[in-house]
Image (tube, rainbow, N blue to C red; front, side, top):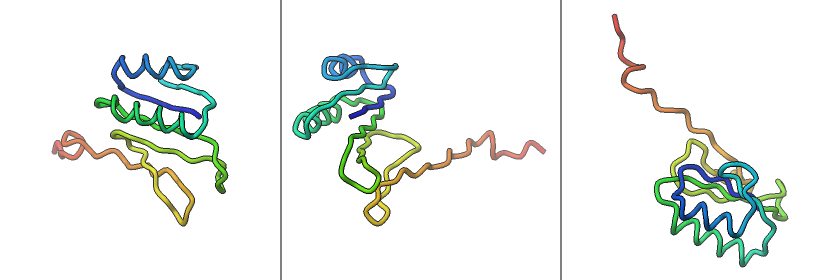
Length: 102
């Protein structure tokens, strides 16, 4: 199981560090049963604040894994005929980029 977290509260970072090994800033890994994984995800969901998180784990699927995500991110999960994929949403142009200076 891998959890990648961005902009989450320090309290949630601390909780994740108790259950999982933080191998890089915001990247947590561990090997747990489904029940414990769901328990950790419930804690992540309730303590997310304004951040975003994705959790990936090994599963008997075509891709060999499944994932869940929470929070605002330009990558979002999409089910394509039973295969879970990640769709990348382009950045919205800012008004400064769309204004014609001429």
